[in-house]
Image 1 (spheres, helix red, strand yellow):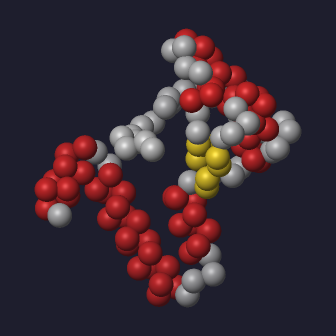
Image 2: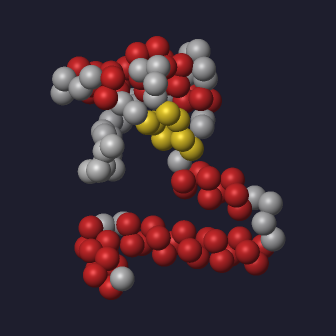
Length: 120
């Protein structure tokens, strides 16, 4: 059992051309090659579910499934909040939006996160 899991941002590359699944995969693949990262160590991918990402053949999801068939997929929590808020009444949407703003301000930088952690 893994006891020491860490969540980190893998990379942040600008996509200067189109934003197809192939372009996104090639950016990730080049990063993996440069840093000698094995796709077999990739256990999960979190995406927003856009067309270029979600396609099971030509999208990013399909291309990653070829090189890492065991990868688990999840939907980004920010987009889940957006999807969940659609059917809510306006009064509850406002509460949810305020909660998201608070969380975003805490997570905006490490100082805020550390202050919040020490406060809790």
